[in-house]
Amino acid sequence: MTTLKDNFFWGNSTSSMQTEGGWNEGGKGLSVYDVRPATEKTTDWHVAIDNFHDFDTDLDLMKEMGMNMYRFQISWSRVVPNGDGEFNEGGIEFYSRLIDGLIRRGIEPMVCLYHFDMPLALAEKYNGFLSRHVVDAFVRFSEEMIRRFSNRVKYWIVFNEHNLYFGPEAYTIAGYESGEKTLSELYTIFHHTVLAHCQISDFIHQSYEDVRIGGMLAHTEVYPASTSPVDNLAVRRFEEFLTYNLCDVYAWGHYSEAVLTFVKNHSIDMDWQEGDEKILKRGISDFISFSYYRSCLLDASKITENDSPNHYFEIGMKSDLSLPANEWGWTVDSVGFRNIISRLYSRYGLPVFPIENGIGQRENWDGINTIQDDVRIEYHKAHIQALKDAVELDGTEVLGYLGWGLIDIPSSHADMEKRYGAVYVNRGNHDLRDMKRAKKKSFGWFQRAFKSNGEKI
Image 1: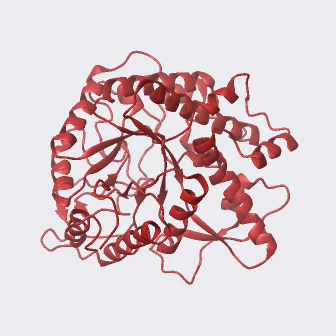
Image 2 (image 1 turned 90 degrees about the horizontal axis):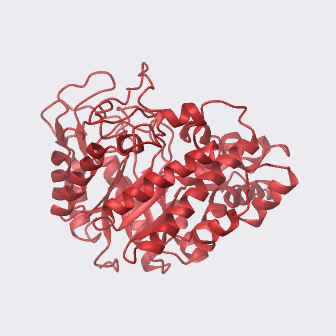
Image 3 (image 1 turned 120 degrees about the horizontal axis):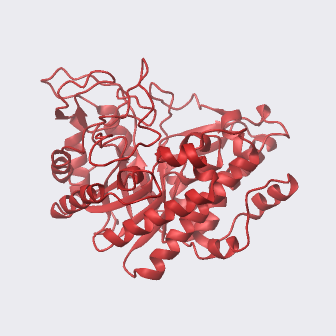
């Protein structure tokens, strides 16, 4: 018998560029993803799984699976083709139909406003979120989407995996086109995205009593590579900068003192302007959400005193060889999942919501027989049990559990062969085939787990 609430959310998360296709249709402008070419081992972003032309098939599968929430993204460039100009009513109507389709099926919509795909015009003209003009344009777009859809969409997040903008990946996900990739540039990008989040959060709280907004992290459980004090210190510093600094904003409206001290000691120019402190104070979130796929070890022996904690992960990360892992080296660690849920709730007291979780597998379908994805079933079974333990044994408040891409989509690095879904989509990286959907063995397992509110796992 589980103690999960009756209104617990079970569902799926995706992004626009990994699902929609229709990259040059319906009045959509170009995003930075639309001009990235296919490679030998990756696809381009022009078709994805073609939800622009047909999302009803996949929504029907979601309903059949027992989902009661779907987190999707509104593509900025589909709604505002050049990022800061006229709104495209055709693009807005597309999302309105998607929202209505979800509600008809009893599926609660959750909207993400930015998932790495900066409008190309703003990237080329302003260097993306390095510019305050782009912050203003993004806030304008976001507030308009909230005005249009808040009567039907009650759950919102602003940035997918927001803490990634405080690490080296920021230069590929923030619309950054050129520069020297200095710490000042990195901290400016991050600060600008935080200002945007806080302005949007404040707008929601000032305007709508029944709408909830959450912050979101990319969360990897990081353990010290040894019992040495320096490894433990490195983990603590990494978590302070890449996790708690942002959560301090979500919960308390200010940056970590450790981060601000680092900024001062290293003369970092993060474009702090008069009035920014007030913006942060008004940016409190209603819940903290996160993605979780794996854990890893941090080896401080590779880190020097000249390295910032923002870069510790890329410098000192190593895999724990005692854990099972998939083909891409992503370890399976459900205990780490429980650790994160319980630690976030204990520290901040805000409801916690894991909104991405899954395992990528290489799979082939013969067109007839059901794919036997037992590894996926065991992965999700262990993680849902870990979530239940966090609720029942640790006393956490958890809003729901959303898997990642439970209908196959191209991975974040455009690899269609790294599949996360319980539904197979019959296409490859270069051959679109017939795009047919086929239920894998895990589909029935998810159906039982979701419809039983996590009791039958």
